[in-house]
Image 1 (cartoon, rainbow, N blue to C red):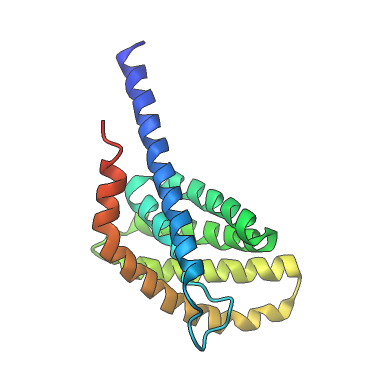
Image 2: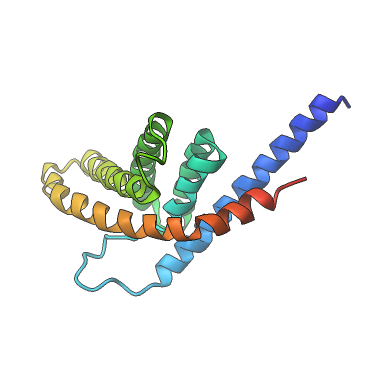
Length: 182
């Protein structure tokens, strides 16, 4: 086996291990989120979106294409744990938000947009993606009346998840990127 082929296989195995760790983090964060009590005075459909922490980390530190893969795998996880409608909404919001995130990090660096700002903007896009996906699959025009609430909760939840990501980023970075070293 040539040295370059061996190196390519090792890089692929390393990437697979990183993706497995990130998917495991998504599963754990989703479980933790499901165990949290409902936040008082918020509608039951408002979720913190802790699993998006791993997707953002992946897009910023591992690979943009890999973040898209994580969104799809996360939506499959939602299919098995919360059903087909939740899965479609997860996919609709997830794809729009991760594409938006990829565009933001491709054209801006952290000097201009903090992790928290990225999280807020992508949470808003996630909510808009879910709102438009809902309007499409349910064929209900009135669902767009939720637009102001979607924006408000995107800001609030994006700020919370962005703050959490900023705090745990050094820990995740060490665990995910260094645990798969040769």
